[in-house]
Length: 311
Image (cartoon, rainbow, N blue to C red; front, side):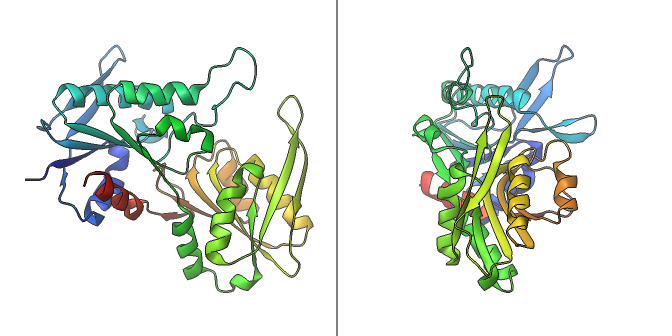
């Protein structure tokens, strides 16, 4: 009998199944093993429907929920679901709880930017563990500053996934240059540039007191390159990406591939990607339907990590 049980919410059914099938250790994938419901007054109800006593429970939790018949990104309600699920599993007798949360919301709020603001990243990390999680597995956090908050977890990187994909799909890599869209993305971009054996250029932006970008330029662009491979952890509204592409066009580049782990695409970001003819390659960390977007599964990466932490 398997000592590890995999539970999942509706949005992560596919990722949980693929991860289960990729794992070497014997585990049980419990379909319908945990339910997230609502009382008539709107309060959240979480029910564990399988026997988890003395078991290691792996909970795949997205921040996507079904609203009005469609899947919608809702970090606030889904965080509450996560906390209640951890508590329910602990009370039901789970020996160990591992939260698999590929994308963690609020990580960009990791400091007090203006007086009177909370440090949301710290608060949600503490609440995740206090609600019952023993460990957290996530992918490409926005900033290394949050790593101590998840010291009992695993923070994975997608550099090798994207590098392998690009090696298979880009016909002429000699025409390519890897781009870090800002200084914060430099370390990630260096990793993929090294794997692809390509040059790296870093873009720099300056903002005013209101947070608006007032200048943007890219340093270190080599000559005779026409294909930019831009690598970052997240795209939300796409403002930084689009300024990057505009600057690169002025420098003479003509093809653009954006590799991004977490894809939100707020507002008209998807339409802007299409209008600017930017090829988007992403992962299934935020499982929303995206027409015309290439999606690489995190299943193999998560399976390897789970094999190690459940050993």
